[in-house]
Length: 226
Image (cartoon, rainbow, N blue to C red; front, side):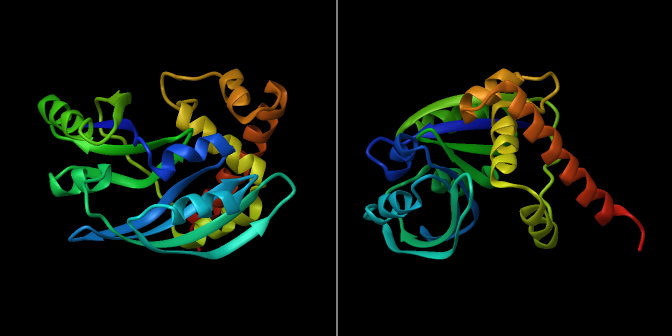
């Protein structure tokens, strides 16, 4: 078994249009039963109203509701609850209905959906790519031979991180992770991260240093004996 990150672009889907408006986000958590889908999205960017409008334009969504929202000095963010009934296969339904194991969260960036998942064999990976190509364009971002332990902080820890990190720190850390800056060996440079975010390299480095420092402090507090 090994880990893989796959990107999928769905033609004529609202997710493929997000990148045009400099909006990024993720599917924080989701449920699926008989193709009835409930998802909690997190959006970040300069035009949250556009992101919500794009989601509402999808025929398969029965309702799209902003449950939390807040403007900040650098960008806007919102938590959006959506209910859907999928009449046709989607990347997520294809994975679950064929016994693949996608991991939360699904990243939405630059018009693509990024999925991290465990795959049992190379043959299974080839089969998944074939199935996904029936609904969109597919690419493999990376393959990790050893299963990586994915750390998902508890809601309490997430809350503490949300309070400590600025929006820009959170954005830079997320972009760095998506690009493979924290991988071993490193798959992206600090210049790559800065270019995607649209800031100077030195500024990106400062945001990373401070943001990662805050995260380390919180995790140390959570792990220390009471």
